[in-house]
Amino acid sequence: MTCKSTALHTVSLLPAGLLRLVTGFGLVCALLSGVAAHAVQIVDDRGVTVTLPAVPQRIVSILPSLTETVCELGHCSRLVGVDRYSNFPASVQKLPQVGGGLDPNVEAIVALRPDVVLMAKSSRVGERLEALGVKVVALEPKTHADVQRVMLKIGQLLEVADAQRIWRAIDAGVSAAAQSIPAAARGTRVYFEVNQGPYAASESSFMGETLTRLGAKNIVPAALGPFPKLNPEYIVRANPDVIMIGQRSAEGLQTRPGWQSLRALREQRVCLFPSDEADMLVRPGPRMAEAARLMAKCLETKSPHAAAHPEPAKARP
Image 1: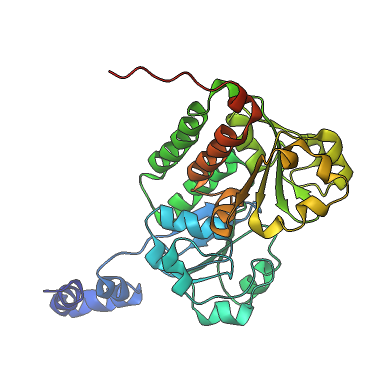
Image 2 (image 1 turned 60 degrees about the horizontal axis):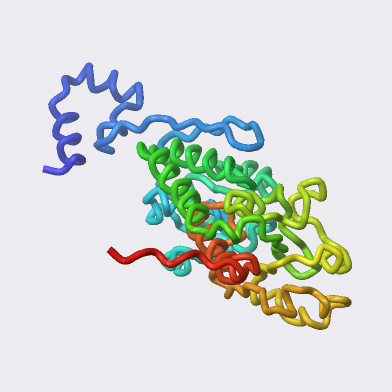
């Protein structure tokens, strides 16, 4: 017998007076559902307390890092729509796309009948969605600590009991990547470009925090903000040992004013990341351990210090 048929049978056995009382309190619906729904409450990054009548089953995510977090927590199947940039894991590429994260198509979102929309705090559609009766949770991870906080928040929203364990495994992966780097590569001076402009990842950015944990020296200080637009001459003066950049942004590096003199270009100490790896590197989300391993491999293979002082070969047992 199914839950629904059990509930129907239970209702049919109630005395008429009690049945009227139960009906009056609206509890018949709860019996028919087979599961008593309970409210879920979360305080988002706007400081807004969002209350949902039950654990959300239909989710629209319009920020790639939040999309990935939902999937990392084991609930990809609850996603019914995503932004155009959410492309991992591969299964989300089959979902309806609702436009960009900052200015998505509100009508398309509403048509998907979501229980909740996960979005960045900087998105401009929160109030419009709420005015249409759509629940919105704004979460915007920008640092390693934020990734942990957001994972636990979404774990709370989805009632995932082991969200803290999942986070600890991710953080341990970053630490393992740091331990894999040869001692001679530590202190390597790195320029990490996130986009043409050039826009850099400074010490205070998510990627900058990863570089610090890996023992590298970021040439862009935190005082300039997390993603400052730099004068190309700044990079020329800093003359980094290694450049990390996505292939989408790397076109014309040699023709930038003064860049022909950069040691990293002359000695081919540039790590070019294909688009899938670049996406992983710049998203403050659950793949931060994989991103750290990519950076660690770059430092190990491109650092002039590591090349000049190779690690001694380990004795075979």
